[in-house]
Length: 296
Image (cartoon, rainbow, N blue to C red; front, side, top):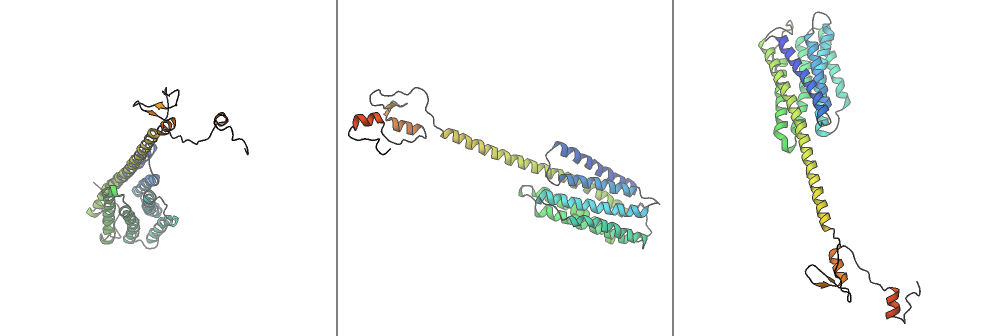
């Protein structure tokens, strides 16, 4: 498979995930940072498309666009993971760095055409942000899903090592064309294709696992609430039906056939409390010598 075909295959993969992420976000619950990751897949697609379009005209613009887009995709993914894991944004100034990389690569085309230096600049910047992302995945991996996050971090770090090794030790020839077939470039593009698929799938799994954990947590809270409500309802005591009461002493017969004073019967079967006083009729009958209405 030639270099252009490999680049085109990478572009199709990135485009597929850009579309898949968009559909997924419209149908499933996603978290802060998911749409940024979706944007990074689109930026990678555009960068690879610009790469394929490089020809004899507008080469400088193409060099600026390709290198800026690749670094911008790495920056966006770093910001996406920061939001996803830490619920906060990355500093805005890091979005300026892709422009500096693009202009630096442009300088080493117009003023001193050195593909080696351009490769080192863009590859190093890309790997700095990608390794930073890997560190965040390891540092803030949820305890219940460490293997998933560690695997994603390992895949990204492995890709960085391949990219850095190609840039620093691959010994590009300054006269070499970017589409010239060689085993090193083919290997790097093949690894890039596999790791691009892997990290996008891992990110989808992270979102899915987090949604599942949130659902389980919400379900547990709901179950706890239902349990508390059932307990509260069981503690509510009501008096209903016909109460057999003695016509003379006013005691009430309970379910076991025992006769209890009305105060004890009501107290045991409700949350009511009694406060003793005397009504006017009883006061007049039993305590005629005392005027209970004085001072009232």
